Length: 322
Image (tube, rainbow, N blue to C red):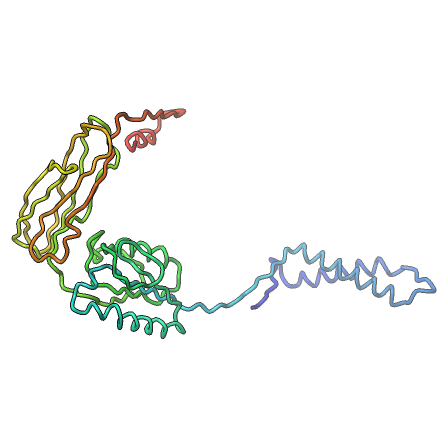
Protein backbone atom coordinates (compact mmCIF):
# COMPACT_ATOMS: atom_id res chain seq x y z
CA UNK A 1 0.00 0.00 0.00
CA UNK A 2 1.43 3.39 -1.04
CA UNK A 3 0.60 6.84 0.34
CA UNK A 4 1.00 10.03 -1.67
CA UNK A 5 0.60 13.57 -0.34
CA UNK A 6 -0.89 15.79 -3.04
CA UNK A 7 -1.75 19.46 -3.26
CA UNK A 8 -3.01 21.74 -5.99
CA UNK A 9 0.00 24.04 -5.57
CA UNK A 10 3.67 23.72 -6.36
CA UNK A 11 6.03 22.09 -3.85
CA UNK A 12 7.70 25.49 -3.39
CA UNK A 13 4.64 26.56 -1.41
CA UNK A 14 5.60 24.02 1.27
CA UNK A 15 8.87 25.88 1.78
CA UNK A 16 6.87 29.11 2.09
CA UNK A 17 4.73 27.49 4.82
CA UNK A 18 7.89 26.53 6.73
CA UNK A 19 9.22 30.07 6.31
CA UNK A 20 5.98 31.56 7.65
CA UNK A 21 6.13 29.25 10.67
CA UNK A 22 9.76 30.16 11.32
CA UNK A 23 9.21 33.92 11.03
CA UNK A 24 6.15 33.77 13.26
CA UNK A 25 8.02 31.89 15.98
CA UNK A 26 11.14 34.06 15.66
CA UNK A 27 9.17 37.33 15.95
CA UNK A 28 7.26 35.98 18.92
CA UNK A 29 10.26 34.63 20.88
CA UNK A 30 13.20 36.83 19.91
CA UNK A 31 12.69 39.16 22.91
CA UNK A 32 10.94 36.60 25.10
CA UNK A 33 12.45 37.05 28.66
CA UNK A 34 14.05 34.04 30.32
CA UNK A 35 13.62 33.59 34.04
CA UNK A 36 16.69 32.70 36.05
CA UNK A 37 15.26 29.35 37.10
CA UNK A 38 14.26 28.38 33.51
CA UNK A 39 16.59 26.46 31.24
CA UNK A 40 17.44 28.11 27.92
CA UNK A 41 16.10 24.92 26.29
CA UNK A 42 12.59 25.76 27.47
CA UNK A 43 12.32 28.71 25.04
CA UNK A 44 13.80 26.65 22.28
CA UNK A 45 11.17 23.95 22.81
CA UNK A 46 8.37 26.54 22.75
CA UNK A 47 9.92 28.07 19.63
CA UNK A 48 9.98 24.67 17.89
CA UNK A 49 6.39 23.88 18.87
CA UNK A 50 5.15 27.25 17.64
CA UNK A 51 7.09 26.85 14.41
CA UNK A 52 5.65 23.34 13.83
CA UNK A 53 2.03 24.27 14.57
CA UNK A 54 2.01 27.42 12.43
CA UNK A 55 3.75 25.64 9.55
CA UNK A 56 1.16 22.85 9.62
CA UNK A 57 -1.73 25.34 9.75
CA UNK A 58 -0.28 27.22 6.78
CA UNK A 59 0.18 23.95 4.89
CA UNK A 60 -3.46 22.97 5.52
CA UNK A 61 -4.50 26.15 3.70
CA UNK A 62 -3.08 24.54 0.55
CA UNK A 63 -5.87 21.89 0.72
CA UNK A 64 -3.58 18.87 0.76
CA UNK A 65 -4.88 15.39 -0.08
CA UNK A 66 -3.58 11.95 0.79
CA UNK A 67 -3.92 9.38 -1.99
CA UNK A 68 -3.67 5.73 -1.04
CA UNK A 69 -2.66 3.22 -3.67
CA UNK A 70 -3.32 -0.45 -2.92
CA UNK A 71 -3.04 -3.47 -5.17
CA UNK A 72 -5.22 -6.52 -4.75
CA UNK A 73 -4.97 -9.53 -6.99
CA UNK A 74 -8.41 -10.90 -7.86
CA UNK A 75 -8.83 -14.34 -9.33
CA UNK A 76 -10.92 -14.45 -12.51
CA UNK A 77 -14.41 -15.81 -12.00
CA UNK A 78 -15.38 -19.15 -13.49
CA UNK A 79 -19.12 -19.83 -13.55
CA UNK A 80 -20.25 -23.45 -13.90
CA UNK A 81 -23.96 -23.91 -14.70
CA UNK A 82 -25.40 -27.42 -14.38
CA UNK A 83 -28.64 -28.40 -16.12
CA UNK A 84 -30.69 -30.41 -13.59
CA UNK A 85 -33.75 -31.10 -15.74
CA UNK A 86 -35.13 -34.64 -15.92
CA UNK A 87 -34.30 -34.94 -19.63
CA UNK A 88 -30.64 -35.56 -18.70
CA UNK A 89 -31.61 -39.05 -17.49
CA UNK A 90 -33.69 -39.98 -20.54
CA UNK A 91 -30.97 -42.15 -22.08
CA UNK A 92 -29.04 -45.34 -21.51
CA UNK A 93 -26.27 -43.55 -19.55
CA UNK A 94 -28.52 -42.27 -16.76
CA UNK A 95 -26.53 -44.11 -14.05
CA UNK A 96 -23.34 -42.36 -15.19
CA UNK A 97 -24.82 -38.89 -14.50
CA UNK A 98 -25.81 -39.91 -10.95
CA UNK A 99 -22.37 -41.30 -10.06
CA UNK A 100 -19.22 -40.95 -12.14
CA UNK A 101 -20.21 -37.64 -13.70
CA UNK A 102 -20.76 -36.04 -10.29
CA UNK A 103 -17.26 -37.03 -9.16
CA UNK A 104 -15.72 -35.89 -12.45
CA UNK A 105 -17.28 -32.42 -12.15
CA UNK A 106 -16.19 -32.13 -8.51
CA UNK A 107 -12.58 -33.01 -9.43
CA UNK A 108 -12.66 -30.60 -12.36
CA UNK A 109 -13.85 -27.66 -10.25
CA UNK A 110 -11.44 -28.44 -7.40
CA UNK A 111 -8.49 -28.41 -9.79
CA UNK A 112 -9.45 -24.90 -10.90
CA UNK A 113 -9.74 -23.44 -7.39
CA UNK A 114 -6.10 -22.24 -7.37
CA UNK A 115 -6.48 -20.17 -10.53
CA UNK A 116 -10.16 -19.19 -10.50
CA UNK A 117 -12.92 -18.13 -8.18
CA UNK A 118 -15.33 -20.96 -8.95
CA UNK A 119 -19.09 -20.38 -8.64
CA UNK A 120 -21.66 -23.10 -9.33
CA UNK A 121 -25.30 -22.78 -10.38
CA UNK A 122 -28.06 -25.33 -10.93
CA UNK A 123 -30.85 -24.49 -13.34
CA UNK A 124 -33.96 -26.00 -14.86
CA UNK A 125 -37.29 -24.65 -13.61
CA UNK A 126 -35.27 -21.76 -12.15
CA UNK A 127 -31.72 -20.84 -11.15
CA UNK A 128 -30.29 -21.88 -7.78
CA UNK A 129 -26.97 -21.47 -5.98
CA UNK A 130 -24.65 -24.46 -5.92
CA UNK A 131 -24.44 -27.55 -8.10
CA UNK A 132 -26.81 -30.43 -7.40
CA UNK A 133 -27.44 -33.59 -9.35
CA UNK A 134 -31.04 -34.54 -8.62
CA UNK A 135 -32.22 -34.01 -12.24
CA UNK A 136 -35.81 -33.50 -11.08
CA UNK A 137 -36.78 -30.22 -12.74
CA UNK A 138 -39.52 -30.51 -15.35
CA UNK A 139 -38.49 -27.47 -17.38
CA UNK A 140 -35.33 -26.13 -18.99
CA UNK A 141 -35.34 -22.35 -19.25
CA UNK A 142 -32.26 -20.81 -20.88
CA UNK A 143 -33.86 -17.35 -20.53
CA UNK A 144 -33.63 -17.53 -16.74
CA UNK A 145 -30.03 -18.75 -16.86
CA UNK A 146 -28.84 -16.01 -19.23
CA UNK A 147 -30.67 -13.36 -17.19
CA UNK A 148 -28.85 -14.50 -14.04
CA UNK A 149 -25.51 -14.54 -15.87
CA UNK A 150 -26.00 -10.98 -17.06
CA UNK A 151 -26.74 -9.92 -13.46
CA UNK A 152 -23.97 -11.86 -11.75
CA UNK A 153 -21.18 -11.27 -14.25
CA UNK A 154 -21.62 -7.53 -14.75
CA UNK A 155 -18.43 -5.58 -13.96
CA UNK A 156 -16.64 -8.78 -12.92
CA UNK A 157 -13.33 -10.20 -14.10
CA UNK A 158 -14.74 -13.31 -15.77
CA UNK A 159 -12.44 -16.04 -16.96
CA UNK A 160 -15.05 -18.34 -18.48
CA UNK A 161 -18.61 -19.65 -18.30
CA UNK A 162 -19.16 -23.42 -18.58
CA UNK A 163 -22.69 -24.67 -19.30
CA UNK A 164 -23.36 -28.40 -18.88
CA UNK A 165 -26.66 -29.29 -20.57
CA UNK A 166 -28.33 -31.54 -23.11
CA UNK A 167 -29.51 -28.41 -24.94
CA UNK A 168 -33.17 -29.45 -24.84
CA UNK A 169 -35.47 -26.66 -23.66
CA UNK A 170 -39.22 -26.51 -23.14
CA UNK A 171 -39.59 -22.98 -21.78
CA UNK A 172 -38.40 -19.58 -22.93
CA UNK A 173 -36.46 -18.71 -26.06
CA UNK A 174 -34.08 -20.66 -28.22
CA UNK A 175 -30.63 -20.21 -26.61
CA UNK A 176 -29.11 -19.59 -30.06
CA UNK A 177 -30.90 -16.22 -30.15
CA UNK A 178 -30.33 -15.14 -26.55
CA UNK A 179 -27.97 -12.31 -25.65
CA UNK A 180 -25.51 -13.46 -23.01
CA UNK A 181 -22.53 -11.76 -21.37
CA UNK A 182 -19.54 -10.98 -23.59
CA UNK A 183 -17.26 -13.55 -21.96
CA UNK A 184 -15.65 -16.83 -23.08
CA UNK A 185 -18.39 -19.46 -22.98
CA UNK A 186 -17.95 -23.24 -23.19
CA UNK A 187 -20.54 -26.01 -23.32
CA UNK A 188 -20.51 -29.61 -22.12
CA UNK A 189 -22.94 -31.85 -24.02
CA UNK A 190 -24.89 -34.14 -21.69
CA UNK A 191 -27.64 -36.72 -21.95
CA UNK A 192 -29.19 -37.61 -25.23
CA UNK A 193 -28.40 -34.60 -27.39
CA UNK A 194 -30.59 -35.86 -30.22
CA UNK A 195 -33.85 -33.97 -30.65
CA UNK A 196 -36.56 -36.38 -29.47
CA UNK A 197 -40.16 -36.49 -30.56
CA UNK A 198 -42.25 -34.23 -28.35
CA UNK A 199 -45.50 -32.30 -28.56
CA UNK A 200 -45.90 -29.76 -25.78
CA UNK A 201 -47.71 -26.69 -24.47
CA UNK A 202 -44.81 -24.26 -24.31
CA UNK A 203 -46.56 -21.18 -22.92
CA UNK A 204 -49.90 -19.79 -21.76
CA UNK A 205 -50.98 -16.17 -21.73
CA UNK A 206 -54.13 -15.25 -19.80
CA UNK A 207 -55.57 -12.96 -17.13
CA UNK A 208 -55.84 -14.43 -13.66
CA UNK A 209 -58.85 -12.22 -12.86
CA UNK A 210 -61.77 -11.44 -15.19
CA UNK A 211 -65.17 -9.86 -14.62
CA UNK A 212 -68.63 -11.29 -14.90
CA UNK A 213 -70.27 -10.76 -18.30
CA UNK A 214 -67.00 -10.11 -20.15
CA UNK A 215 -65.16 -12.24 -22.67
CA UNK A 216 -61.54 -13.19 -22.04
CA UNK A 217 -58.84 -14.95 -24.09
CA UNK A 218 -56.40 -17.72 -23.29
CA UNK A 219 -53.48 -17.75 -25.73
CA UNK A 220 -51.99 -21.24 -26.02
CA UNK A 221 -48.51 -21.64 -27.55
CA UNK A 222 -47.77 -25.10 -28.94
CA UNK A 223 -44.39 -26.51 -29.98
CA UNK A 224 -43.66 -29.80 -31.70
CA UNK A 225 -40.32 -31.47 -32.45
CA UNK A 226 -39.80 -34.39 -34.79
CA UNK A 227 -43.57 -34.70 -35.23
CA UNK A 228 -43.79 -33.99 -38.96
CA UNK A 229 -46.98 -35.09 -40.74
CA UNK A 230 -48.76 -35.83 -37.46
CA UNK A 231 -52.30 -34.77 -36.59
CA UNK A 232 -52.91 -33.32 -33.13
CA UNK A 233 -55.93 -32.10 -31.18
CA UNK A 234 -56.09 -29.29 -28.63
CA UNK A 235 -58.81 -29.68 -26.01
CA UNK A 236 -59.86 -27.25 -23.27
CA UNK A 237 -62.05 -28.46 -20.42
CA UNK A 238 -63.87 -26.39 -17.82
CA UNK A 239 -64.01 -28.63 -14.78
CA UNK A 240 -64.84 -31.89 -16.58
CA UNK A 241 -66.81 -30.51 -19.55
CA UNK A 242 -65.13 -29.92 -22.92
CA UNK A 243 -65.59 -26.28 -23.93
CA UNK A 244 -63.17 -26.10 -26.85
CA UNK A 245 -61.56 -28.54 -29.25
CA UNK A 246 -59.54 -28.04 -32.42
CA UNK A 247 -57.49 -30.38 -34.59
CA UNK A 248 -54.47 -29.16 -36.52
CA UNK A 249 -51.80 -30.71 -38.73
CA UNK A 250 -48.12 -30.55 -37.80
CA UNK A 251 -45.78 -29.68 -40.66
CA UNK A 252 -42.02 -29.86 -40.27
CA UNK A 253 -39.80 -31.24 -37.53
CA UNK A 254 -39.81 -27.86 -35.76
CA UNK A 255 -43.35 -26.63 -35.48
CA UNK A 256 -44.81 -23.74 -33.45
CA UNK A 257 -48.33 -22.34 -33.33
CA UNK A 258 -50.28 -19.99 -31.08
CA UNK A 259 -54.00 -20.68 -30.74
CA UNK A 260 -56.16 -18.00 -29.07
CA UNK A 261 -59.33 -19.25 -27.40
CA UNK A 262 -62.13 -16.88 -26.28
CA UNK A 263 -64.41 -17.73 -23.37
CA UNK A 264 -67.33 -15.95 -21.69
CA UNK A 265 -67.35 -15.23 -17.96
CA UNK A 266 -70.95 -16.34 -17.36
CA UNK A 267 -70.75 -17.11 -13.65
CA UNK A 268 -68.59 -15.89 -10.81
CA UNK A 269 -66.08 -17.89 -8.81
CA UNK A 270 -62.80 -19.72 -9.40
CA UNK A 271 -62.76 -21.52 -12.74
CA UNK A 272 -60.46 -24.46 -13.48
CA UNK A 273 -59.50 -24.92 -17.13
CA UNK A 274 -57.49 -27.96 -18.16
CA UNK A 275 -55.66 -27.68 -21.51
CA UNK A 276 -54.68 -30.95 -23.14
CA UNK A 277 -52.85 -32.00 -26.29
CA UNK A 278 -53.06 -35.31 -28.07
CA UNK A 279 -50.55 -37.90 -26.87
CA UNK A 280 -48.61 -38.93 -29.94
CA UNK A 281 -46.85 -42.29 -30.15
CA UNK A 282 -43.22 -42.42 -28.97
CA UNK A 283 -43.12 -38.97 -27.38
CA UNK A 284 -40.17 -38.46 -25.03
CA UNK A 285 -42.58 -37.34 -22.28
CA UNK A 286 -46.28 -36.71 -21.87
CA UNK A 287 -46.01 -34.49 -18.79
CA UNK A 288 -45.88 -31.31 -20.91
CA UNK A 289 -49.02 -32.20 -22.88
CA UNK A 290 -51.28 -30.98 -20.07
CA UNK A 291 -51.50 -27.61 -18.31
CA UNK A 292 -53.95 -26.31 -15.73
CA UNK A 293 -55.25 -22.74 -15.57
CA UNK A 294 -57.17 -21.13 -12.71
CA UNK A 295 -59.10 -17.93 -13.43
CA UNK A 296 -61.15 -16.00 -10.91
CA UNK A 297 -64.39 -14.43 -12.19
CA UNK A 298 -65.45 -11.43 -10.11
CA UNK A 299 -68.90 -9.86 -10.10
CA UNK A 300 -67.95 -6.19 -10.34
CA UNK A 301 -65.05 -3.99 -11.27
CA UNK A 302 -63.34 -1.60 -8.91
CA UNK A 303 -63.68 2.11 -9.57
CA UNK A 304 -60.40 4.01 -9.70
CA UNK A 305 -60.24 7.82 -9.59
CA UNK A 306 -57.30 9.49 -11.32
CA UNK A 307 -56.69 13.09 -10.20
CA UNK A 308 -54.15 15.46 -11.76
CA UNK A 309 -53.51 19.21 -11.83
CA UNK A 310 -53.58 19.31 -15.64
CA UNK A 311 -53.99 16.98 -18.64
CA UNK A 312 -50.99 14.73 -19.11
CA UNK A 313 -50.19 11.82 -21.47
CA UNK A 314 -49.29 9.66 -18.46
CA UNK A 315 -52.94 9.65 -17.42
CA UNK A 316 -53.95 7.95 -20.66
CA UNK A 317 -51.19 5.37 -20.21
CA UNK A 318 -52.28 4.63 -16.64
CA UNK A 319 -55.92 4.33 -17.70
CA UNK A 320 -55.01 1.91 -20.46
CA UNK A 321 -52.87 -0.19 -18.10
CA UNK A 322 -55.68 -0.41 -15.56
